[in-house]
Length: 261
Image: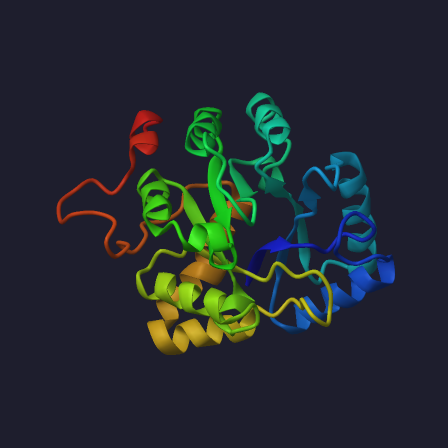
């Protein structure tokens, strides 16, 4: 399985503090069946994104892990004005493996007024946006219509595996399951931060989706779609999300048509 949102790099943010903790977290991920990890330290007002330092830590982890898990680079990109402007000017600086996909995180409370326009500008810069864990964000849970608009526009959604398992509260679990049933989810990821309260457990969520929604959809969320992100290629044809399009209506949004994608 591919885990595209994982705080594995030590000493950079609120993930593991030491190399030893990172290695323990990686070992837990390997035992869980995760074969590829995108290392995603925060890029926020609190945590400065340092690509060269991140690459150095990834190299250190690779030397210890011996190829038993593949490590890539990305970030947990907070939608601040400074971040957005820099990403527009340097589209591959923050993206997964320097490709077309970028994980974006909204503020917990309040959606910035011009955020849709900013997302549009990022798309014009060639970036495909993945909205991270909306089920855990009270502002986004209250804006289902807005989320539907973004999906119609061609943006993608990543849900935290633990949300489906009830580990982020009843509100997050309920909304995650609603999105799952409506086929609004494109990726499951662990958003792991440690081996205890935020462990890298993707297998249990995979099994839940396979049991309740079918093996094909579980593979799409944990293998096929995240593999496309890892390789920076277009996603395969996706299930038609419930309530997003009328029968016969083109499934690509305005931004996607504008960019001929």
